[in-house]
Each structure stands twice: as C-alpha cells, then as structure tokens.
Length: 371
Image (cartoon, rainbow, N blue to C red; front, side, top):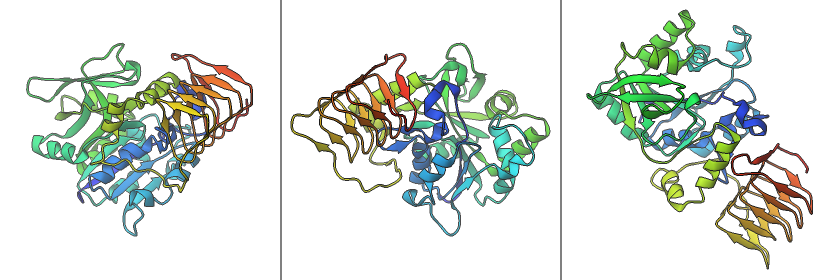
C-alpha cells in the first residue's frame, strides 16, 4: 500500500496511570506478556503494506527509543522511508510547555516532516490502543465513501467517557454529531484511528496553528463537523484502551479469555514486537500454573493463578501469585504471596512478603523497586 503514510502519536502520558508512566509514555507500557502498546497500531499499518511511518514523541521517550530501535523487527529499517522517530527538538525551540496540548499542536511541531511525505493519504493513530484493525479495509472504505476523514470507531464503548470522543451516525451513514469527553457514552466510541488526504492534513495543520487550535477531536472533528464530511468505520473487534491503573489491570485480565486473544492476535494480521532470544519457560517439579498467560524465559517454582507473566519472570519455591501482572524480569521470592499486584520491570518481591491489592484498585509497584 504505497500511497498511505502512517503517523503514530506516542507522546501521551496520564497521571491516572501513576507508577506505570513514571519513566515512560502510555505507548511504551508493556502489555500482553511480550508487547508494548505501540506494537499494535504499528503492526496494523505494517500489515496493510505501509512502509513509511513517523512516530511523534515529546518526553519520557527513552523506553520507546530502546524498544523501536531502527524498526527492523517491523521490517521498517530502510534506506528510504521506513520508521522515522520524531522527537520534539525543533518544536522545543518555539514552545516552552513540557507536553503537546493536542494532536494538531504535535503535527505543527513536525510540519517540515509532513511536507516531505510522498504518499497521498495519511493514517493518524494513537500508539496506546491495542486492537487488530484491518487498515486495508479502512482505506478502501475511505476511498469508496468519498469522505474527507474516515474515523475508526466501535459500537461497544469500554473507555472512560471523560477521556473519549463519540460519534453519532446519521441516516446517511455519515457522522452527524461529535461529542468530546461527555459524562456518559454517546454513540460510537472513537478508536483514534483516522484516514485523510495529505493535502487536507497540511491545510488543517496550518489553519489550526494560525488559530491556536491544538485538539484534533475538539478543534477539527467537533469544531469543523459541518464543513467536513466524516465517515465512520465501525470496528467491533476487541480494543483495549489504557487510561488508569485499574483499566490496565482489567484489560490485561481480558487476555486470559481465549476468544479475546484470538481476536487481538489474529494470525492473518500478526502483531509484531521487539525480538528476543529467550529460552522456553521452566516449570519446576511441584509448581502449578492455571489460567495464566506466560511468556518465554520464565522460571516457575511456585503457584501461579489467573495471571499474566512477561519474559524472564521468576516465581520462587512456595510462592503464590494470584490475579497479578508481572512485567519483564520481575522476581517473587520464596514463600511470598501476592494478589492483585502489577509489578513493573525488574521489581523484586522479597521472600515471605504478602502483598494484596483489589480488583478495582490493584497495587502497582514502580520499575526496579524492591519490596
């Protein structure tokens, strides 16, 4: 698909994610045992044949740089085009705030990059939504509808309404109304994946910069809905949005359902991630593991129930792990017992410790902490 260029917004953080975004953005949060959130829309674009993708960053992006590298794991390491990481150096000289206020401001910050794009159409997507979107079908829908903007949305809202955008679909099949951050869901929930022409994007970016409009949802979709023809593409496959520690835990637990995994990790559209050569997980004599998702390289000597374990996790002898998410390199000491805990990378739970959170308020432990 040589006429579509991808732009991923990977600059967003969220104070509701507390310890999970202390050193990273939402796009870089580990998810599903071996992935990062950005892997999903990055893979969606690659699966559709998109070969040129720009990733807009702003702050706390070292984790993202380490993960993406040259883009070779997504077949995006190329002499011409490929993966382009767009840090905020040029933008920082013009603005003093520490973060972009919205997508239009972020696009204005990389306007020189936008003018160099050779494709005629643009796919704008957030790097913090886990969904397996058929991008080829979305583009075909966009071309057939003749719309100015095609917006991917779902009729099964799951996110916090106060942090979401909603579309009301009219009798003609087009978007009749746009609501931003309502008190309750109002129609189809936006999955923040849009397709439009390069010329329209450049025009909108210049207009918004001149009029101090920084939000794509409020300033363009809602503010210009009467001037723009917006077509919805309703996607009702599984979609995970991470907006709080509780939602991260809930969406991680969703993956223990086989039907959710089959939908999200469709073999016809594989989700790619940074490659590692880990050995198989080792289960010691007397260990027990039930209804859990285990990555490679783990050592299990205790009991694991209803949990998601990332690469290289170690569960000691006599330890019990229930309803937990343990990220890469986490260690649970001998005879420790933890439940409803999210342990970030390289966390160490000392022997004989007992840690208990709750389903609605899981205990999150920051990266590298020893408890």
